[in-house]
Amino acid sequence: MTNGLPFDDIRNLIAGLPAMDQTAASRVQADLAADGHELGQVRDVAQWFAAATGRAPARVSRPMVALFAATHAVSGKRGMADPIGEAQSRVEAIAAGAAPVSQLCADYNLGLNVFDLALELPVADFSAGPALEERAAAATMAFGMEAIAAGPDLICLGTVNAAGELSASALLCAVLNQDISEWAEFGADDLSLVNQALELHQDHLRDPLEALRRLGGRETAALAGAIIAARAQKIAVILDGPIATAAAAVLYAMNQNALEHCLLAAAQTGGHRKAAALIGLKPVLNVEGLSSGGVAGALAAGVVRGASEISARRAEVNARLRA
Image (cartoon, rainbow, N blue to C red):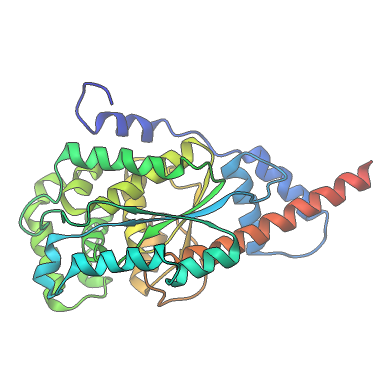
């Protein structure tokens, strides 16, 4: 980081994100057109992967799932008995191979990393004050950038637990200028907490990064950092869940081209689908009701891998025909 304000380097990175490689996408399009089969969304996914990675033919070779775990002080107001213990149990289940995402990653040959973001130290209650200090939020974004250190070409980004979904909904309302009562699916008490937070922070929400640090959690900040780093390194991204969508919305509010390398795994609810559509995210899977935890991301990775395999094999056939 430089000696400026903590968010200054983040702003510069978001403003200077590289363009997608449309030449690679066009090569995939031409290869698939020669096949004569109508592939629909499979074709679109193959072209997207080529543009995101800058490779054609583009075959998924190093896919992985990265999940972030964090806790929120506001969980106490929501009647959660032991949110820290619940989050720790989920992390342990993934590590032990007992979680559904662990089993999918083993079956699909996907790498799997889980990042514990200080579970024993929940972020502050966003309905009573800022969730994070600016320096802490920027540092967590920088930590999230390290999620790509293993060098994947496709990464599924999500969360271990759903504790931050209320926070994510507040953040989505702030950066998308939406009324939560019109689309978020929470009870009256939860909606009241969100409205309290939005009213408390209303003078500071025009800046998306300020909205992130006031309303978001550590997992949201880390996810935003991972999305930025993936774009800079030509890594395709699948976003899993509302919290990842909220992180993406922050970046979209700052640069409307920031999410071109991202797809949504699936929309959990109608409200989630609406929020994703507002920032240009299309779901790979047409299913609802999958909870946070990486399952949708792992399943969607299979679709992307299949689409890339079809395009790569078609390119090989075309090359033989031209020889």
